Length: 183
Image 1 (cartoon, rainbow, N blue to C red):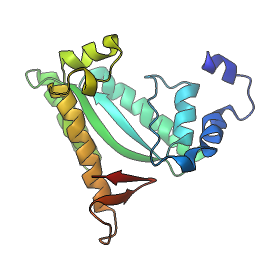
Image 2 (cartoon, rainbow, N blue to C red; image 1 turned 135 degrees about the horizontal axis):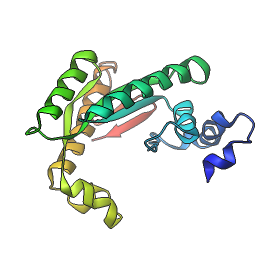
Image 3 (cartoon, rainbow, N blue to C red; image 1 turned 60 degrees about the horizontal axis):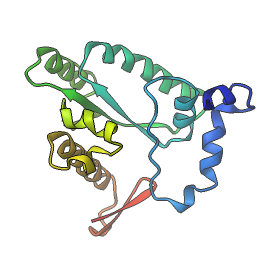
Image 4 (cartoon, rainbow, N blue to C red; image 1 turned 180 degrees about the vertical axis):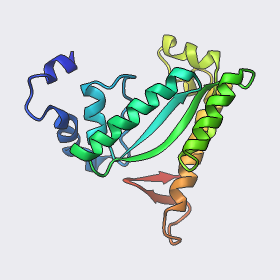
């Protein structure tokens, strides 16, 4: 319904950015989980965001979608948010037994060597089940491979953030882009 309401709104691409500007200073991080489409909700999110983390399924058609998303990010940078950065690409639904999964991962790492996270999220039944129970996987089954992968991703993001910090940052209270991580 929001997309329909935004159609006739002035500066519709900036609605979320304007709303978040009023409360942004109260939060260290704001995570925006976008729908898997390039509609007005996603455009609003990219216009409001500092950076984007791109989950990429290890499937052929995901590569086509990635091309479209990168073109959209370039357009957003050119017209709406020149500071939008790519935080990284996250390989998801990876099945090491599947040759296509391995080929997609290899190709993405070849074309984006510094932007692909080391963490890879495996294809995992518990990840698929958790939404139907109304729970994030970290609460639904914290010991499953999928939940462990997302924990590893959080640690990897934390490590990457620390690399760009001045050496005087305290290890227990680390400043990052727009936020603070407490150990």
